Each structure stands twice: as structure tokens, then as C-alpha cells.
Amino acid sequence: MHSGKLLEASDLTKVFTKGQGFVRSTIEAVSRVSLSLDLAKPEIFTLAGESGSGKSTVAKLILGFEAPTSGKIWYRGRPIANLKGTKEFMKDVQPVFQNPFETFNPLKKVQSYFFETERNFAGSAQGSYPLTEKSLELVGLNFSEIKDKYPSEMSGGQLQRASIARALITNPALLIADEPVSMIDASLRMSVVNLFKTLKEEQRVSIIYITHDLATAYYISDRIAIMLRGQFVEVGSVKKVLDNPLHPYTQLLKSSVPDPDPRSRWEEDIALSDLETREYTRRGCKFAGRCPQVQKICCEGEPDYHAVDDRLVKCHLYS
Image (cartoon, rainbow, N blue to C red; front, side, top):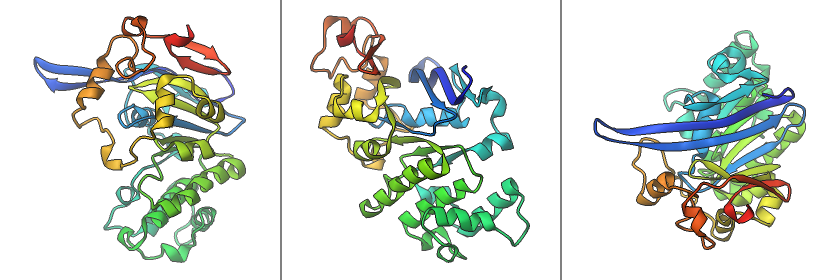
């Protein structure tokens, strides 16, 4: 753990066990992942990769929704395990989920979420909600657009912006945005993406942006980590990584953008495909079975990280 860090994760690992009795298998959904965000310099750090690469599991570990099997996470120099569930942490670290229609109860008026959040975290008096109006304004909405409305009475774009606005009421230092534009109409995606850039630049909010959309990742990110079967395989500035990818997997992602269909997302309670299972359990490099530059050593031992052109690359090609 280092001083001056907003968030730091070291050798983060999460193992899931499936099945019962003798028919059990384990999947290392996140494997020895390390990352950090500076306290003094807000940034947008992107986790990108195919569905099933472990991106959302990393988000759940940071938010405290899952406990790591091993490794440590610190927030402002303090172990997250000691902060989980505290008002301080919930105020400072806010999630933005993929589907805004799952964020809001369909039987509850949208405005009630804003009022409850403002009362609980800002101590606003009943009937006076200045932070609600301010946060809505930041995302390009006004109160009349949510007043007395249920989620079904709003568009997906409006509801996702409302979801971000509710998160901003607590004046967070960190947003964890998991596929936040994948279910929004293409015409509205850039408005949300631009909003994240504005939040970083004007509100000094750091953002962990999780996506398999490399176009939006390239547009808004400062740094990017490419994930493959639970591992970071290339980490560096977004322009270097995507303009001149070094890892064969990053090269594949750039040449054939993954299917953005949210229905293809892997969730932990759904059986893995044969390809995912083979790659998660593969000895050596996880990508060896698909890599056009595979060597004998790739099938025998896991590669180390190598520093190449101001980035880290987990590949035997750079030994």
C-alpha cells in the first residue's frame, strides 16, 4: 500500500467453485490483478475485454459485493475489508450499473431514490433537496423530467442519466461504471460518455469504466487494462495500447470488435462455454489456443509481465 493513492489493489484473486460433492470445479475468475488510481490526479481507467474476461468481477470486488479469495484492496490507504458497508465508503464510492431498469424498482417513483439519498448522506431536510436538482443538472436533466414518474415512464437514456445523477448526490470520489452505455440507444451513448469526461475534468471524479466497446474506451480513457480470462494482459495509456497493441489478444480485439450484445455477458451463475472453460483452466498462457504467434513455451508456463514502451505486457514474445 502506497500513500497518495485513491484506490490500490494488489494481487487480487477470486476463485469460484461450481457444482457439488465429487462433481466440482473451480474457476479463477480474477487472477493476481493489480491496479492503482492516484489521489491527486483523477482519471478514467478502463477494463476492457470479451464477455467472460472477469471485468465485472473486479468491479464487485472493489465495491465489496464479493470478497477476494486472496490479495488486498485499499481505499485512501485503508483496507476495503474494514470499510465495506460503512457510510463513509458508500458515500465516496458509487456504482453505475449496466441496466438502469434494474437499478430502479418499477413500483417506486424515481424521485424517491434521490430524496432518500440526499436525506441519508447529506442530511437535507424533508422537502428541501438542492443536491437533487444540482446532480440532475450535471447530467443534463431537470427535476420536471423525473417528477412523479416511474421508471417505465422514462426512456433508457433518461433513466441511465438519472442513475448517474443519483450517484453524484453523495459527491463521490470514485465511480465504478459497469457497461454503462451498452443498453442505451446508439444516439444517446456519446452523451453519457461525454458526461464521464466532464465529471473527471470538472468534478474531479475518478472512474473505473468497464466495457467491451473499444471505441468509447479509446475516446474517454486515460489508461486501459485489457483483460483475458481473469488476467490483465496489457496495461498502459489508452492511445499506446489501442494505437499500437503489443499483446496478440489486444491485436485480436482491435481487429474484430467483440459482440456488444449484453445478452452474451457472462455471469457467475451461468455455465461457462467450452472455450471459456478451456481458457480459464489452460496451463501456460490463457490465449495460447487462439494465438497466431503461439510458441511451445506458451503452452508450458504462464508468462511474466514485461515493461515495453511504457506499458506492461503479459506475453512470452517480450521475454
